[in-house]
Length: 151
Image 1: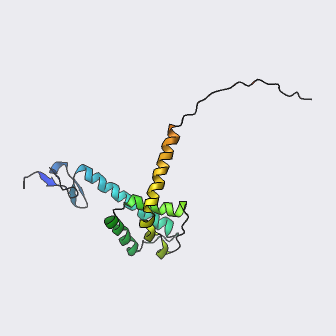
Image 2 (image 1 turned 135 degrees about the vertical axis):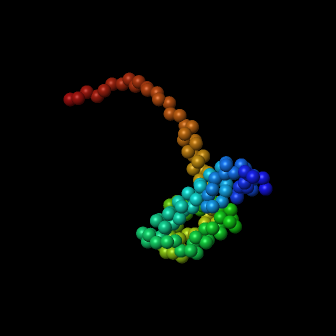
Image 3 (image 1 turned 180 degrees about the horizontal axis):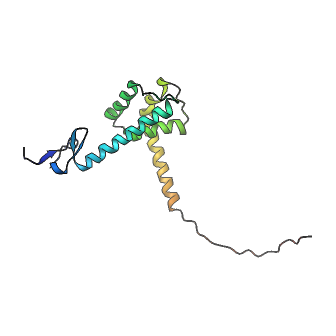
């Protein structure tokens, strides 16, 4: 191996060692490093949402079976942590599915509502762009008329 060159743990490409960044004791190129950081942030947001919103004031750890299931969805179905979070919010806030206890946190429903959530989010983004493109013209019209007299 050539000195001063390292392989990125994610993409497998070779880069100068001085340009590599270490994350979780592995070397990554700049792009993969940023992706890993963002993925970790999305995971933390998903974890916090499940703990704070779905476990209903029980500020305890999320059961390991739930964590395992989330990681399995990411690996087997290529779902993102961000997408799973949005899916849970969609199920809870838009279609009003109630999550009452540990076994009914809605985690098992994520693969079934994930595509619906994506469609909903795309529709929202399109609607937002339409609203942003909408221009209100400020025009003043003078209306002539007779005011009623005060008697």
